[in-house]
Amino acid sequence: MDVPFDTAHEAKKLAEVHEREEEDLAQLLSDKYGMTYTDLSMREIDTDALRVIPEAEAREAEAAAFAKVAKTLSVAIANPNNPALEKMRADIEKWGFKLKEFLVSKKSLEKALSRYSELSYAVESRAGMFAIPAYPKGSGPEAPLTKKALGEQLDAAAGLKSLDRISKIIETMFTGAFALRASDIHFEPEEEKVRLRLRLDGILVDTYFFDAAAYRQLNSRIKLLSGVKINISDRAQDGRFSISRPGPDAKSEQIEIRASFIPGNYGESIVMRILDPKATLVSYKELGIHSKLLARLEDEIRRPNGMLLTTGPTGSGKTTTLYAFLRGIHSSDIKIITIEDPVEYHLDGIVQTQVEGKKYTFAAGLRSIVRQDPDVIMVGEIRDGETADIAIQAALTGHFVFSTLHTNDSAGTFPRLADLGADPKNFGSAVTVSMAQRLLRKLHPDKKKERALTAEERAMIAKVFEPLADKSLIPEKIETVWEPVESEDDTGYKGRIGLYEAIFMDDELATFLRDNPPSNEIAKLAAKQGYLTMAQDGILKALSGITSLSEVADTVDLPRV
Image 1 (cartoon, rainbow, N blue to C red):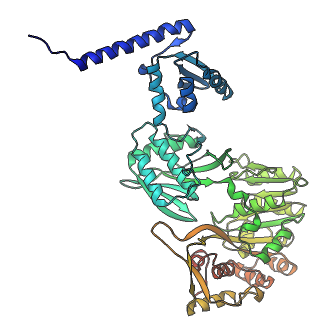
Image 2 (image 1 turned 90 degrees about the vertical axis):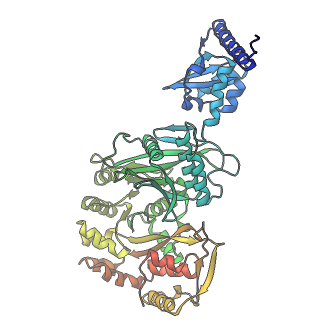
Image 3 (image 1 turned 30 degrees about the vertical axis):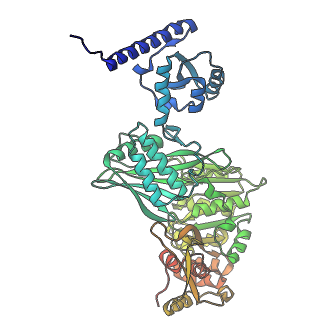
């Protein structure tokens, strides 16, 4: 009886013979070329190594990196005579790697090259750095994006089965955060899921939900990037890392990320603050300061000595304002030194220092800075009496000092300094400007509508402007305000602008402060100077269509009528 010929079985056996012959040939050629032979089908491909050589260059050179230990890169080569290899070797040496070459079969090389399809756009992931390469046209971090679209992109990334799934999720998350101009990224573990929220224009917005398993992997990767201990989850930790992304001129730009981890009932809560250096490039003339106040401030910040203090809650833009002032006055003939906790943005031409626990505090650093012969000093925050005293002495001895305080308004600056132990008798000679500020959302210019004021709103606005000494600042017609046109995926707001108020030192105020009066009495006296309060500034911005009346009411206290 004839046995049927099994074509599929025989073809498989023949293919195995050919593969074995191919591997045997590669092994023989390795002796000829004096190279070590390896079979990549028996080895794991290190994706971090694979990323070092761009895919197009790898395919052209018929080579692929498959292992990386410290600065030694192992590369599989199928054709030692390929002319493109010389350029690849030169590039690898230029990147600081020591090259270790292996001869492989073409089939073995194809295994390594096929892994490129599994890589995310994130080209590097290590402690302190997460790098994102160039994006296809129309899909980069500056491309238009909605919260709904970001959710769909995160769905796609979370559903990947490749080894680089977590890298792709992180890449998608940050790309979306940049495109939506988020200031913070929040991970909030709950009983059955983990909530991802972005702070957009100062408001937290629910963006996505991760399952617990994915979050554990995300948590570990973010900890690795941030340089904190991965195995510690029962106490708070702080870290930071950089995101490298392509800029508009094809040069890479770095964005600092400050990460905070705290323990919770269902896992660690993570908040990542996005410190975009573009925020400091804004001129102080573009912050939203009223023209009358701006004209006075331009003179005050150029004094040879004195002190400008800006106050407000965390996230009110105080640091951005001070950096804008520093950039505005910086020139080659003055020396500016800062002491910050931490250094959030790097400014060219300015000496920036950072506090470090008990070794280098604000007070200790300020003492040292004064001996460095600066013209201008910026102290990140006055937190204690010792720092307040040294800052005041610096302002009295030929330096101009910029700093911040945590108080509700500009009038509260002086009682706060007194509470810290500073002598009120020195306020008149040292503190030249006390400012306060808030940030509020701006209406999108194409998504707003005008409406008439109600009688109650008219009465409230009249009450806000009643104490204003300079009546010329009040608009002649107060009839309408503007509101956002909201949609399912848009609030009608885009970007933020500052509200500002300031008190300037004069002889009457200096004498008044000697007895340490309460802040409400200081505010009444300062009203004679004729500058807008934050509430008045907000009302003017609402009347002119920059923001809405409801946004002003949510940001500052408005009187009831």
